[in-house]
Length: 91
View 1: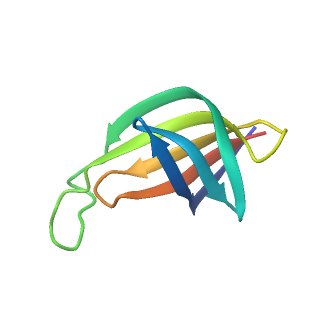
View 2 (view 1 turned 180 degrees about the vertical axis):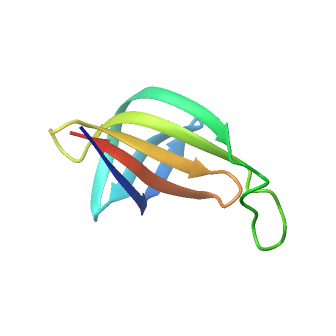
View 3 (view 1 turned 90 degrees about the horizontal axis):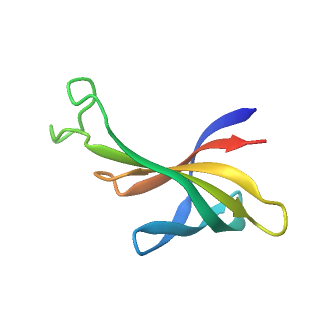
């Protein structure tokens, strides 16, 4: 079962991959990357206030843990906005 969030997260990246993130005040360490893909949002539907197209989003499905309990998390990086969100969590 998945839960959808959309919460902003702070992410540390090494060699282009997320290695740690903070969510809900807890530090999660990425154990491994399960999937990575890139999408382009519909530029004709969403634009930034300056008229620039909204651009790419990178998705990272990772195994991560704040301690011993490992879970699966989907992180989303908005390239143009330079911001990260936690998209989904798998139970």
